Every structure is written in C-alpha cells, then in structure tokens.
Length: 159
Length: 72
Image (cartoon, rainbow over all chains, first blue to last red):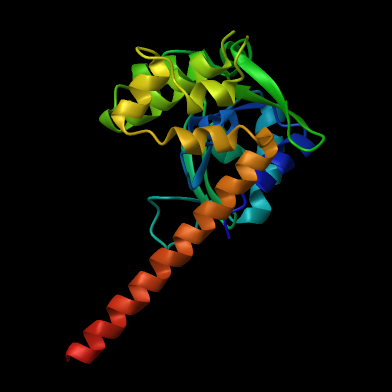
C-alpha cells in the first residue's frame, strides 16, 4: 500500500533533515501529477543518516534493481556508501538524493524551499522556481509537461 | 480587482504561461481543483490515486492472465 504521506510524516517525527523534491513536491504545490515515489534530498551528516535508517528499516527497504531472491542488508552505514539511492519499501518507492542537479545539496535546497505543515510537522518542500531549475537541469523530455504545470502554478500564485 | 490563483487558472489571460500550459494539454481544471486542498491533503490524494492505479494495473494483469488461460 502506497503511503508516501506517512513516510514523510515519519521522517519529520524522527527529526530527519530533508527537502521533498520531484513529483510529490509538484503535487504539494497543486500539480496534477500522480507519482508512486517520494524523492527527498537529505543532509548527509552521520546523525541524519542514522535517523533515516531508523525510519526506513521497518519498511524493509531494498534497492529497486536488486534481485529479489538475494538477501539484502540495510542499516545506516549503507547510506554512507553512496549518495543517491532508489529503494522499494512496504509504503512505496523512496528515492534519497544527496544532491539535486542544477541546485546542489541539502543546505542549498533549504534556502530555496518553503515550509509547509504536514499535519503538525513543518516540512521543507522545494519551491516552484527551484523545481523548474532542477527539471531544466535534468533535461529529460518527460519533464516537459511538468515544467508547463510548474510555470502555470507559478504564474497563478504570483501577485 | 485582484484575481485568485484559482480564478487565474480557470480563466487564463491570453498569452500567459497558464494559457500556454492549457494549449500544451495540461488540464487546468485539475490544477484549480487541487488548490482547494492543503499541501498535506494534496499528498494524501496523490497516495489514494497512486493506490487506485496500482489496483487497476493488477486487475488488468489478472484479466490478461485469464484471457491467456482461455485461449489455450
């Protein structure tokens, strides 16, 4: 069962430092995009990696490209061994990004985010202009529709 | 008089980015509808829609598997 809202809530409850990017960020701003994964850019401090692992461990994370018949061990040190991860979990797919192309790392993203209330948990979501920068930097044809949606929402919100 | 974001989306000004999105094929009524909800509600509605899509895909797979069995 996909429950990306609950995953984001658990990250905040555990004190994880992260910014929501990607499809869920677009959706949070009002986009009509339906996505099955939660993309977050996270702080790579040791304490934060431990907090992320605490949240993910009960969700049985496995890399999306990892053979199902092989055992996979996950703990916080797994997150030390890479920067970007694409996990499948019992609550949906979760992508952890150490940095976002065109913008930078967690600290850079915080400056370009807005804080929204996820039912009592203030949570950073990448701003519409920053999402547009990231999508342009990614340069993927599939993002063209997303860019149109973001441009429309930006204009709608602008005074 | 200043227009609200929903009003702008439902009646885009000619030559605007909103009109451009509409001409590209973006359903502006969906965007306007989404603005009625809080960010938290929008994420929950995404989850519900994604779960519905998964159920639909599973039903399609089951139907295809049944068709294969019938065809044998």
